[in-house]
Image 1 (cartoon, one colour):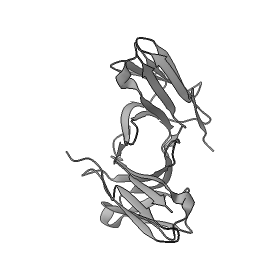
Image 2 (cartoon, one colour):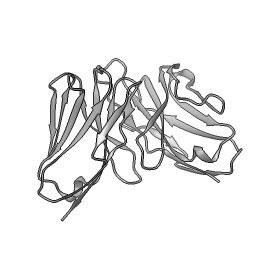
Image 3 (tube, chains in turn purple, orange):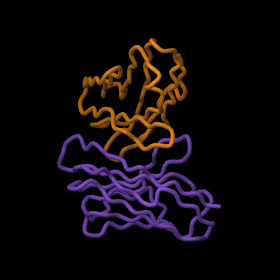
Image 4 (cartoon, chains in turn orange, brown):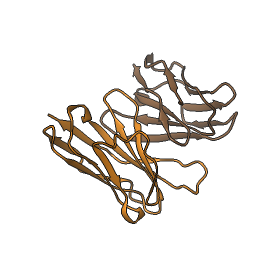
Length: 115
Length: 107
């Protein structure tokens, strides 16, 4: 079974430029999560989707970040415009909502560097 | 707001020794997760704990949950070098992570 796929794996952009990250969850997983992980810290949840509905986006900086999950499968996270402080690893994870333990499977992440 | 504290943040131990990592959280929760992260890699699920008194074991690692004390422990038995990694606990449905414990096992 294929795991969570993310692309690109690395991205270097100048500040004020836009950037987008893509995630393909494990087949059949209806819950999808986006996290940001700063160096030396634990992941911070940005947004959680149940199918195509965003059910928890309280930590998403809505002035510059946006996300979508069309058709309840793949998801895209966008930053526009990027700031120096956005440099981090962006992780996508998925889980089965109907499974009580909701075990999450993480993708490899996208390492973003903003210069 | 749910707060999750792990300690220690850094742990250097000798091979063959035992040690425990602690995860405290501030509000009631029905689930707790432990993850491992190797440098430059993503997170690997180790344990999912869903009830008070739950204990899970895999190899040299054993995790337990005390929901009344709001405490989970990750116990390492007879450490080996391959266990060197950062270990995170995460609490609740909104997955609030601790800062992580960076474990180094020395020969």
